[in-house]
Structure formats: C-alpha cells, structure tokens
Length: 173
Image (cartoon, rainbow, N blue to C red; front, side, top):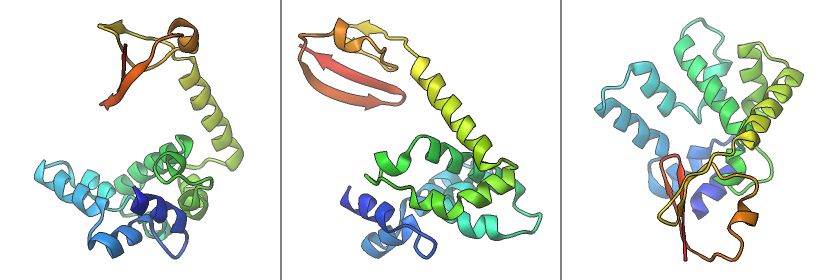
C-alpha cells in the first residue's frame, strides 16, 4: 500500500500515478489491466482505456478527432474517481493531484463548467447517502449500510470485515 500512497502523493503534471509503480515494480496496474482485458477479448477501446487511465493528460491534450471512444470512457472514469475521492481511499491523500492536472481538460471535453460539475458531484453524493437498504442474514450485514446502523447494532462486536464485489460483510458476535 505504501507504493500506491506514494504514487498518489507524487502525481502531478510531470509525474503520473503509474510512474512510481514502474520505478518500484518495473510494471504497473494499467499494463496488467490492459493485458488482462486483451486476454478476455474485450473491445479495443476498453483495453485502451484501461491502459491509458493514468495517461489522461496526453489523451485529452490530443485535439484530433480520433480516440473518441477512449476519451468518452476516460472522461467518465476520471469524473467518477474524483467524485468518489479515490485519491483519499487509495492514495491516502487530501488533494486529488491527478484531477488538478486533467480535470479542466475532462470538463472541457464533456462540456461541463466547474459549477455544473460541482452540482453533479453533490447530487451523486446525496443520492448515495439516501441509499439505506440492508440485508442481515446469519449475523452478516450487507452493503449499503443504513444511517441507523449504530443504533440497531449497538452492543455487538464485529470479529471481521470483508469486501466481496459490491458487498461489505461484517461478521458480528
């Protein structure tokens, strides 16, 4: 995890997240993802988006009409990463250095102003907070977790926490 945190901390206009991985491992997660996508025979533009998801500055700086599918996928991904605060979760950073570098290019490409994007981000976050469905079976709690979780489960001790696909599983005593 140290390498990932370091990669996000060092990211900026002159250094991509994957540059730290390349220096440490002689490869990076984008390369591994690209070859995995190719072996699964995913469409070329999907494989290219995986390979280039930390090369967004170069992709969006290219003003030619080519790579429209790639730019569309990367625009969605970069906006989603910023909205979900991946830089905090994955990189343990307080600033999204990658978004600060490419965000204006992404928003320009999709035709959103900073104001419109902030409204979109707030709307999406509010929608996520309203989700409050829980399934409890065999003392296991599934995501999404309701706001009143602490009241309903007070006094229980959790022995393990697991993440499986979209579920967060909490094993309680």
